[in-house]
Length: 213
Length: 226
Image (tube, rainbow over all chains, first blue to last red):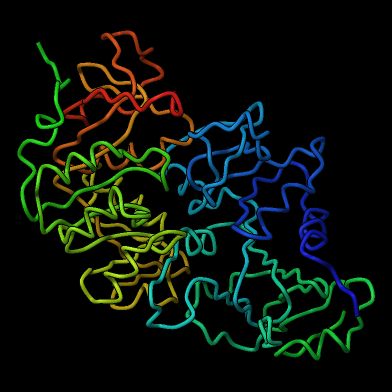
């Protein structure tokens, strides 16, 4: 079993993003997706700290300290981009104007629930950021994550065990083993397997039944 | 003549009372009014409730204010981040009250306060532990949770330009929370990198109209932020 590495996971997500979408990318693997959308395919990246038309990281000698993404990394602005304040930025999210949000997650459940912000109700120091706004407000929520935890624990589950970020929001999951759709009333449906991965291997790594079309 | 430009940090901080709710602009280090926070540390007000996206890093700025025991409560969306050591220590020791708020709800609660809206309904956090104990209502077949406006005594904001009427502009992603915080406080104090003459900021380009601003202090942040 080989599967995708992190870059290949990001590239696989990028394949499915059409021109014209407004897209918000979370921290971690989601941020890397931007590197795999060809420039001629105009996808407009939104950053919750008030940027539309976000571009790639600048050359080290071209860093603008005033211009960072949601992960506080230096970025650039593409021609046509704009800046705005936080209430407008989250109006775009909460008002249903963002076509797609891609987040990482601890767990995704067969009913589309996502848990990605706290590992217990009494987290030592919880931090939610914009995840709940994005989960509730974006037109589509996709997750990109490793299929299992480092010690083989399930992240694709029947029901989330960690505190929820948003119920019933996830419609697709990209992992190192392949791509799953989350279909309401049915659960996980395998859309694609990564190279060298079998359906049996993906099922063995999942805590919920996988369906095929 | 209206002149909101103050000449010293002491004048900028004058009158901030113990027990105040203080909004602090910025997203991480960007758009964060570092010098005004230092001024507040110097000024001495205590028993503060601070509202900021992040809970400070290292042992300077907001983290220093908390370490000095001057902050009773913080209202934050993302308190834990790389280097938020003081927050983590105080929170673990039970010396700091934390209200965690989704980032968009936090921004909207302040916008609402500035706009005279006492509360509003949002889908954010419905079905999660952050909606526990809050009123919920259905509109058009979807469930929403009620959130209250977040009004404050003081806002500390960082702007790029300011004039003597208090009109402000911000630099690129340094805008973030600053305009909504400026709306939501009784006394908004802005540190600005550049003082402009009245009319010099193109009216169409004013981001925060001076009606929301009480004091403007010129701070030269040095070449790195020029």
